Amino acid sequence: MILKPQGIKGELKVKPTTQENLQKITDLEIDGVSYPVKNICERQGYLYIILSGIDDRNAAELFRNKEIFTDISEEPPTEGSYYVADLIGCDVFKNDKLLGKISVILSHGAADVIVVSGEKEIMFPHIKGIFKTVDLKAKHINLDEKIFGQVTDEI
Image (tube, rainbow, N blue to C red; front, side):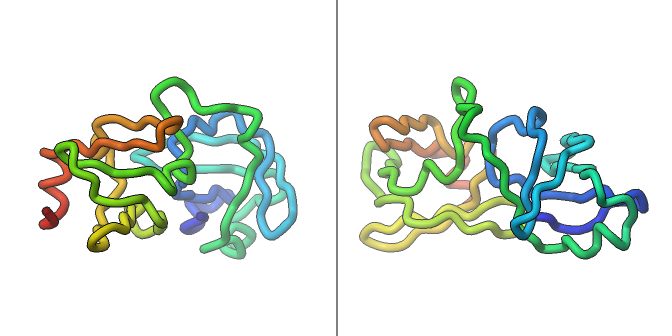
């Protein structure tokens, strides 16, 4: 999602919804219109993107809170990474105990929020290190007990 304009030359501050490296993206789609990418850089977990045709802050302001899309299907995730959307439907375990399945991932603030539906609904931020292991083929995720315990009162 585009959060806001950055600076006066049309740069957009974007919250990425994937952990994939997006530096190779050549086009982005906003409201059904494709824009060639001039530059993408990452700083402090955000992407800063300059698109052709968006040359000043006023033009960039029109894109505030808009969703952006790109075709990354040709670029599979690198070893040890995944698309956040691929987590939906995975079983989540803590200490070998099944907590439930990831039912939805909410885009919210500084980190996405993972919603696990089971005996009870559990919500926690998708932060670095929260998952000890992710096996998408088996649809099996193990939580890091220490980090999980720091971000939730559950269990």
